[in-house]
Length: 154
Image (cartoon, rainbow, N blue to C red; front, side):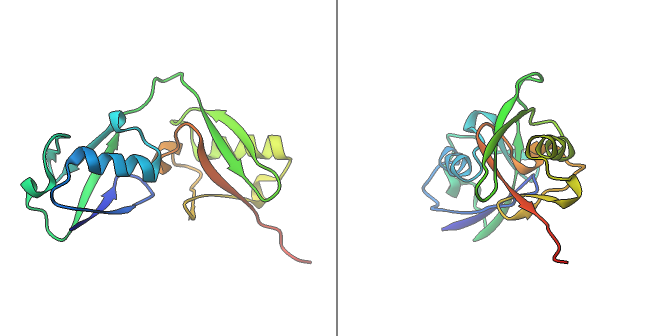
Protein backbone atom coordinates (compact mmCIF):
# COMPACT_ATOMS: atom_id res chain seq x y z
CA UNK A 1 0.00 0.00 0.00
CA UNK A 2 1.29 3.42 -0.94
CA UNK A 3 -0.11 6.67 0.39
CA UNK A 4 0.05 9.49 -2.16
CA UNK A 5 0.02 13.14 -1.18
CA UNK A 6 -1.32 15.04 -4.22
CA UNK A 7 0.09 18.57 -4.46
CA UNK A 8 -0.37 21.26 -7.09
CA UNK A 9 -3.23 23.28 -5.62
CA UNK A 10 -4.31 24.66 -2.27
CA UNK A 11 -6.11 21.41 -1.45
CA UNK A 12 -3.76 18.50 -0.82
CA UNK A 13 -5.59 15.17 -0.60
CA UNK A 14 -3.95 11.93 0.50
CA UNK A 15 -4.97 8.81 -1.39
CA UNK A 16 -4.03 5.23 -0.53
CA UNK A 17 -3.43 2.84 -3.42
CA UNK A 18 -2.41 -0.79 -3.80
CA UNK A 19 0.84 -1.38 -5.73
CA UNK A 20 -0.93 -3.54 -8.34
CA UNK A 21 -3.24 -0.68 -9.40
CA UNK A 22 -2.45 1.62 -12.32
CA UNK A 23 -1.80 5.34 -12.54
CA UNK A 24 -5.20 5.58 -14.25
CA UNK A 25 -6.78 4.04 -11.14
CA UNK A 26 -5.05 6.72 -9.06
CA UNK A 27 -6.36 9.44 -11.39
CA UNK A 28 -9.88 8.03 -11.04
CA UNK A 29 -9.54 8.36 -7.26
CA UNK A 30 -8.33 11.95 -7.71
CA UNK A 31 -11.38 12.62 -9.90
CA UNK A 32 -13.67 11.29 -7.14
CA UNK A 33 -11.88 13.37 -4.51
CA UNK A 34 -11.41 16.68 -6.36
CA UNK A 35 -13.97 16.52 -9.22
CA UNK A 36 -11.23 17.04 -11.86
CA UNK A 37 -11.76 14.87 -14.94
CA UNK A 38 -9.05 12.28 -15.67
CA UNK A 39 -8.55 13.72 -19.17
CA UNK A 40 -7.47 17.05 -17.66
CA UNK A 41 -5.00 15.54 -15.17
CA UNK A 42 -1.30 14.94 -15.52
CA UNK A 43 0.62 13.47 -12.60
CA UNK A 44 4.30 14.13 -12.07
CA UNK A 45 6.88 12.45 -9.88
CA UNK A 46 9.86 14.80 -9.69
CA UNK A 47 10.43 15.60 -13.40
CA UNK A 48 8.74 12.50 -14.83
CA UNK A 49 5.16 12.39 -16.04
CA UNK A 50 3.39 9.21 -14.93
CA UNK A 51 1.63 7.20 -17.66
CA UNK A 52 -1.95 5.97 -17.23
CA UNK A 53 -1.26 2.36 -18.24
CA UNK A 54 1.70 1.85 -15.91
CA UNK A 55 1.32 -0.07 -12.66
CA UNK A 56 2.15 1.81 -9.44
CA UNK A 57 4.71 -0.80 -8.29
CA UNK A 58 6.78 -0.10 -11.43
CA UNK A 59 7.87 3.23 -9.94
CA UNK A 60 9.13 1.74 -6.65
CA UNK A 61 7.52 4.47 -4.60
CA UNK A 62 8.15 4.71 -0.87
CA UNK A 63 5.31 3.99 1.55
CA UNK A 64 4.36 7.67 1.51
CA UNK A 65 5.04 9.69 -1.65
CA UNK A 66 4.26 13.16 -2.99
CA UNK A 67 3.03 13.60 -6.56
CA UNK A 68 2.34 16.86 -8.38
CA UNK A 69 -1.01 17.25 -10.14
CA UNK A 70 -1.23 19.58 -13.11
CA UNK A 71 -4.68 20.38 -14.47
CA UNK A 72 -5.17 21.22 -18.14
CA UNK A 73 -7.25 24.43 -18.29
CA UNK A 74 -10.67 24.50 -19.93
CA UNK A 75 -11.35 26.66 -22.97
CA UNK A 76 -10.79 30.30 -22.03
CA UNK A 77 -14.42 31.37 -22.53
CA UNK A 78 -16.11 28.35 -20.95
CA UNK A 79 -17.87 29.08 -17.67
CA UNK A 80 -18.64 26.58 -14.93
CA UNK A 81 -21.45 26.45 -12.39
CA UNK A 82 -20.25 26.69 -8.80
CA UNK A 83 -22.67 25.76 -6.02
CA UNK A 84 -22.31 28.22 -3.16
CA UNK A 85 -23.72 26.59 -0.02
CA UNK A 86 -24.91 28.45 3.02
CA UNK A 87 -27.24 27.03 5.62
CA UNK A 88 -30.71 27.70 4.25
CA UNK A 89 -29.61 29.49 1.06
CA UNK A 90 -27.79 27.58 -1.68
CA UNK A 91 -27.29 29.01 -5.15
CA UNK A 92 -25.28 28.63 -8.34
CA UNK A 93 -22.84 31.18 -9.69
CA UNK A 94 -21.32 31.04 -13.20
CA UNK A 95 -17.69 31.95 -13.77
CA UNK A 96 -14.47 30.80 -15.36
CA UNK A 97 -12.15 28.53 -13.43
CA UNK A 98 -9.38 31.04 -14.15
CA UNK A 99 -11.32 33.84 -12.42
CA UNK A 100 -10.07 34.87 -9.00
CA UNK A 101 -11.65 34.05 -5.67
CA UNK A 102 -12.19 37.83 -5.35
CA UNK A 103 -14.40 37.68 -8.47
CA UNK A 104 -16.50 34.92 -6.86
CA UNK A 105 -16.74 36.96 -3.65
CA UNK A 106 -17.99 39.95 -5.66
CA UNK A 107 -20.76 37.83 -7.21
CA UNK A 108 -21.73 36.35 -3.84
CA UNK A 109 -21.91 39.86 -2.38
CA UNK A 110 -24.13 40.98 -5.26
CA UNK A 111 -26.51 37.98 -5.29
CA UNK A 112 -26.79 37.39 -1.53
CA UNK A 113 -26.58 41.04 -0.47
CA UNK A 114 -23.95 40.28 2.15
CA UNK A 115 -21.06 42.77 2.51
CA UNK A 116 -17.82 41.25 1.31
CA UNK A 117 -16.10 42.09 4.58
CA UNK A 118 -18.40 39.57 6.32
CA UNK A 119 -17.86 36.71 3.83
CA UNK A 120 -15.45 33.79 4.04
CA UNK A 121 -15.44 31.12 1.34
CA UNK A 122 -14.16 27.60 2.04
CA UNK A 123 -13.51 24.51 -0.05
CA UNK A 124 -12.94 21.24 1.84
CA UNK A 125 -12.68 23.35 5.00
CA UNK A 126 -9.81 25.44 3.62
CA UNK A 127 -10.29 29.21 3.60
CA UNK A 128 -10.00 30.53 0.04
CA UNK A 129 -7.62 33.43 -0.58
CA UNK A 130 -8.89 36.38 -2.67
CA UNK A 131 -5.87 36.73 -4.95
CA UNK A 132 -5.77 33.10 -6.13
CA UNK A 133 -7.56 31.70 -9.19
CA UNK A 134 -10.46 29.33 -8.55
CA UNK A 135 -8.58 26.46 -10.20
CA UNK A 136 -6.07 26.60 -7.32
CA UNK A 137 -8.93 25.07 -5.29
CA UNK A 138 -9.88 22.68 -8.11
CA UNK A 139 -13.08 24.58 -8.86
CA UNK A 140 -14.71 22.89 -11.86
CA UNK A 141 -18.29 22.22 -13.02
CA UNK A 142 -20.71 21.69 -10.09
CA UNK A 143 -18.06 22.24 -7.43
CA UNK A 144 -19.36 23.11 -3.97
CA UNK A 145 -18.03 26.09 -2.03
CA UNK A 146 -19.09 26.82 1.53
CA UNK A 147 -20.20 30.38 2.33
CA UNK A 148 -19.55 31.49 5.91
CA UNK A 149 -20.96 34.77 7.17
CA UNK A 150 -18.82 36.26 9.93
CA UNK A 151 -21.21 38.20 12.15
CA UNK A 152 -19.74 39.65 15.33
CA UNK A 153 -22.01 39.85 18.38
CA UNK A 154 -22.68 43.30 19.81
